[in-house]
Image 1 (tube, rainbow, N blue to C red):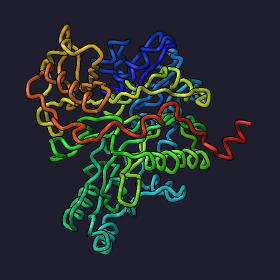
Image 2: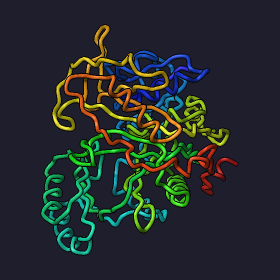
Image 3: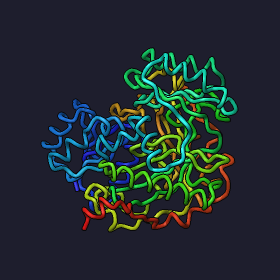
Length: 450
């Protein structure tokens, strides 16, 4: 099969790596791709991955058998809709279904209609209304604080966790002041939740659901979860602290309910649905929904997938996921992200990355902010690469990952030293992840299927 892959991050390098392992893989084009994706095919430049007409024109020229969309921006811009209208098989949801990520207000409404547990929140289109509500509401939520969120896509930068009224007012003013562009035209004020976070990915074709193992991302840039949030400094799977009961609640009462609700509202979701979860004292609660694979979660999840990823992607795109049972490697995986100095603020580019050929067999290095220049690989972004290792336990995987991180270097390289530290023993939910499956059970879609 010939595949067109959209995206340029570590997620897309991992997806290209997984696609190329298929016996049915024939050709890959990556738009725009990076220094890692080019190992498996051809990077395509000069076309915006978020321009529906331009991507459709490229697809007509290349004639791929499958289009796999990695990032949220093309999905929310309707690239998948345009491609499907022209007859291409697409792994990724429609813009209407992707609104579960592109609008936090819509996602909150969907969760309310579906009976999905989440934090209390209100949305506002005017700064004065948000500030007025904030001053009335914060005393009731003072124990936990409040979270100010830009409604739309803000590249992971539109969320501010506030400890007091002054911080919350400043965050509201910043959002309405244009700090996040159109994403801040509407702002959510949300109750702050406390607990441990986990990522719950699942494949779905709008009718059937195949759950992936749980994973955990580390966002802050410094050890001990200190410093500003980033796109992700590392990840591990599975979380040993997550019990079977909570895992079941997330699968049944969050992911599967969301898939059913989207279908019943005429927005069937095809692709990867990814709720970010907080395990609170009152049980699992949704932090937010994402309409695609997380990054760096992808880098630790796809190495655990034993089932052919190309087959899974094609089944999702063609509405035939019910024909597949997924198998997962029960070993743990840990990924450590190496970033440029100064990230998530300004950072230099062009430092040579050394030691990529010194990693152990079976350890994967997924490139993100990197480019190739003749026979050298140079830094070209904030998050430069992710080193991923597997082990019979999280401790083994962690030790092997850090051993190999130590063999890679570039000027000013920074990484956290505590990824997966204290993550717990081997997860009790791992056995149930093997071959997990669930139908959507949407009356409307079941009728269509018949």
